[in-house]
Length: 241
Image 1: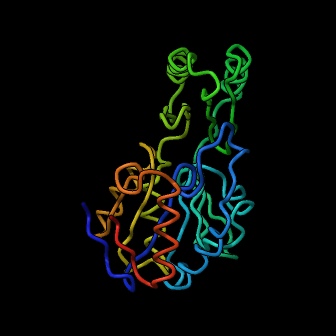
Image 2: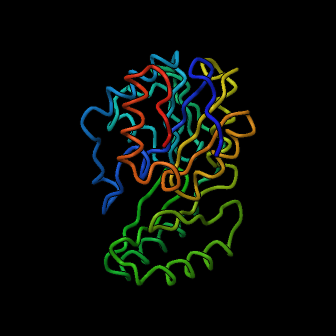
């Protein structure tokens, strides 16, 4: 297991869905546990501002759920970054999917009852949590769709397939955050729960920090929240086990 960098030299980078908040039947149904905003705000202060949420969701969604508790946010898998609370959102120059792809995604949602299309700024996701039998059919249809164009790739996550542009991943988000104050010169700790977070973990380790999967270390988001709360109370990292 990676060792934790000293608290006064660390930066904390956290995935959202499945890490900070429990997974929900639909993207709009997630909720923030009582006290979590206060815990993040306390950790942000203790880390001299070096705390960020790194997510595939839009920054606006993070703001709605967390207000300014995290300070820095990287949304859309690094396609949009705000380096500190109150800063402007910087957007990477990435393509949007062709309109006929979105029309096809709409048709796939309609043809598989329970499937849910989530539109994003430069991509989209098809959720099949309520239609598990549609998993392979959706994957096949999206593979065929992507074969008709370029500049995009298909990514699996928790009960969904996501189409997003090449060049947008959580590793690039971590790299961008670590270039600027208050993250520059610190050692990043990245915590995430699925394959989309592994790029962020690898990048954190490249910077001399650590990367942890929720299921391997904390069991579930409640375990993550408990560890964060204990760390905030201590003003130092609580034991991981």
